[in-house]
Length: 239
Image 1 (cartoon, rainbow, N blue to C red):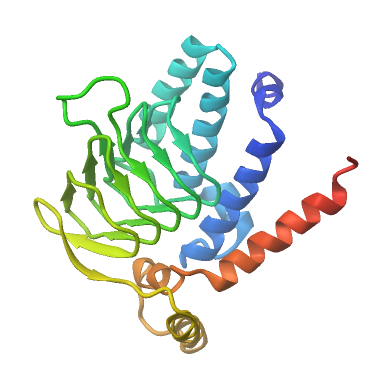
Image 2 (image 1 turned 90 degrees about the horizontal axis):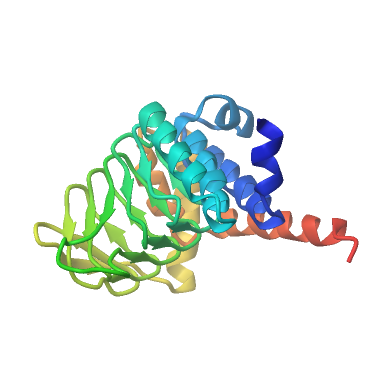
């Protein structure tokens, strides 16, 4: 049975799973190592299982993909439609309560906390779910509804309900969500974020995982690790 599923996975899927493992290890203090992520992290398990279901769906095995979706939902309490598109290096914090609709997409390096919904409004048909950009942080219980774009590097704070497009680097909060501020993408801000992260790691201060991810938001260390992995893949590519 394992071989049946593995045969459907592409090289892109395998690379994405590698990056998902790195994301869980680097962006969750309680996980801390790739081995712990692979063995124990339920969010990662749900995400990898989704990738198998997604590839089955893309290869015309919709019934088997839907069956696997139901197993994922029962086991990890994460209901992710196998037709959804999820980018590389995403963090699914624990999976519990996460709902991602059929036409939803996420970019790379997205962090999805527990209880997040990427759903429809009930007033649309066809392409009806959100499009999440790169490096977005969706905090606990955040809800994004409708075929709207959430821009790169933005943050949707806990319990917010988003029904309108979110600009890149925006911080949105409330019901309905409104822009309350903007992040900065300049080099001085990036250096300050990285220095602050290194300070947290060095001093062992009391910071939760969300706070650490905000410092990682422009991701110099994370992107460097990803680039290294890509270079290794290229070096090993016989073509």
